[in-house]
Image (cartoon, rainbow, N blue to C red; front, top):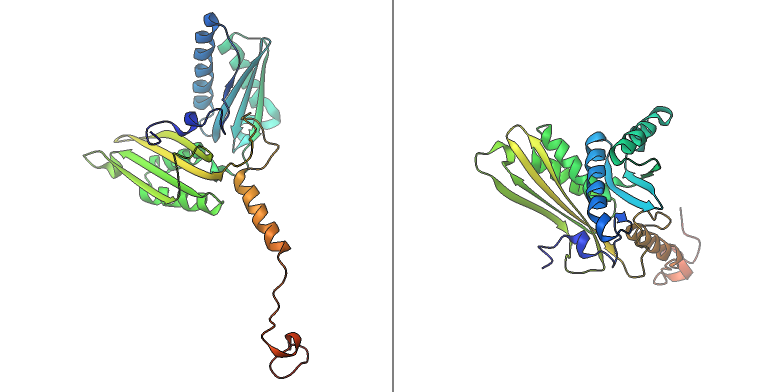
Length: 262
């Protein structure tokens, strides 16, 4: 079951929050759902090189709030904020709403986001870089940032081969059945001259033990990887220094009980 269900949808309400936060009646639900899909499709096509990780949509009292999580906020904001104003006017025309607000949140560590990692691999494959090299570079940078494990699967005419095939490269641990494991997932494709190549990325960021804020826009706390790293460094700082009592003279050298030579 863990192999076939989407890891993000599988953890909704447990350790993950919804990316569309609004309430609708039975009559309006379908229209708002289609509108959310239009907004996400439009923004991903409009800012295709903006490093977008996710788009969170909230609706409150006739107000539409769109929060863009990106690793390159400068591209979206533009010079003097002109690009954001232009996108806001375009969204007003797309949704036929007068009150549209756009928030931009920067992702400090894009190597730990599955969408950005998958997009990086896809852009490299489109630029005719060997797919194995692109995947191994992405895996190395993700593990260097503190992830517990990563799995990447590519499918299609790899390397321009006549027959399509699938290849999977995995390092570390990615336990899909454990619900308290924070696993980020993305499915992206690369457009090449010999067809589409599908890319799936799973990134395990660690175990969530306490109660977690389910709001996807919550950036007040640290991620589990940084918390685990801080705890490890704190334990290392609080650990008392070792004294080598095996040597004679209370820590002196073997020549006698004097001070150690430097």
